[in-house]
Amino acid sequence: MKILLTGASGLLGTAVARAAAAAGDEVVGVVGRWPGAVPGVARLVSLDLADSAGVVALARAERPHAILNCAAIAEPAACDAAPELAQRVNVELPAALAAVARELGARFVHVSSEQVFDGATPPYSIASPVSPLHRYGRQKAESEGRVLGAAEAHALGADPCAAVVRVPLLFGNSLGGRRSVHEKFLEAWSAGKTMKLFTDEIRAVASAENVAAALLELAARPELGGVLHWTGAEPVSRWEMGRAICAHFGFPPAWIEPVPRTALPEFTATRPRDLTLDLAPLDRELRVRPERFAAAMERLVLPAWWSERKAPSTNLQAPEKPQT
Ligand SMILES: NC(=O)c1ccc[n+]([C@@H]2O[C@H](COP(=O)([O-])OP(=O)(O)OC[C@H]3O[C@@H](n4cnc5c(N)ncnc54)[C@H](OP(=O)(O)O)[C@@H]3O)[C@@H](O)[C@H]2O)c1
Image (cartoon, rainbow, N blue to C red; front, top):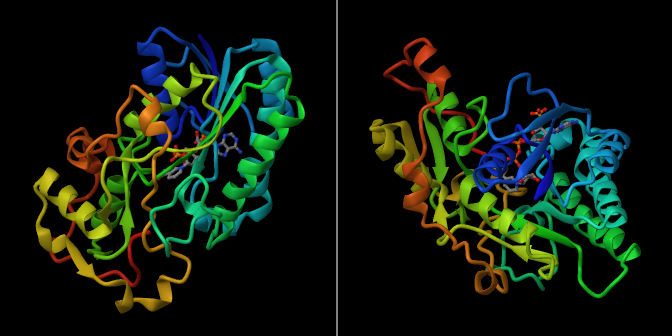
């Protein structure tokens, strides 16, 4: 299968590229500012996806069997810092990709987020109304409607050609070593800060590799369309994530500090409390299975920059805010 993959340099996109290449797929990968190679990508194209005309032209020239959209401005703070840019990348881009996929008869898989929910009433099913707490969540929710609307507007037959997959907080080893959860912890520790981690903020974290496998299976299953959920096998708290990361790398448990959300109310208004998702119907449909947290943890490595940094202080300072 020929796949056009946007966000090929991202945490999830790199996992998709590797897995697709290993399965014998041909990957045309789109990156933005990433300057290097991306393992698994047969042809790498640099484009500013804030203007979707370039990638639409690329799709028409390449005529892929499937388009997988892993590009996004994927952090709430970054969306607030550049709202118009984030709107173009997080909403206009997926809508344009859905339309061109339908025009070409290609399968379209768009990645959305658990952050479309407010975290107050888990578990969330695919029928639960969205309730985002911040701009990023609102943009992801809007992207879902735009993608399915664009697919529908061009619909030729009964089979849905677009799938929108809400995924959770992702674990993994990113290309630059600064995008995933443990890499952000490492950045804080290398700056001499301990981590305050909520004991009662819950995410069903998944590995980028496991989500990539689910997305690739979905790419080949056009009968599975609409909004879908995919996460790890069990919900864990931020504190449990931190404890597991410290244990995995042999770091002192004192580098993390457990706190309840009530201890830092100024930071919790826009942080969903519990984003456990109900995986039906995908959990019945896919051969890929949701992965256990401990199994995903085992593949985490220290990024190259960690061994090149100045030695961290042994007396880390408490941060002003919790880990995001
Ligand atoms: N990471 C998570 O915990 C998480 C959780 C839930 C949902 N998601 C969703 O999962 C998907 C993948 O996220 P991720 O964590 O892999 O994100 P990421 O690591 O931040 O990667 C984002 C990708 O988008 C590309 N991109 C962003 N703006 C661009 C632009 N203007 N032009 C071209 N490329 C641009 C980046 O390219 P360059 O780096 O080359 O510029 C990069 O390849 C997103 O839809 C995200 O919303 C992620």
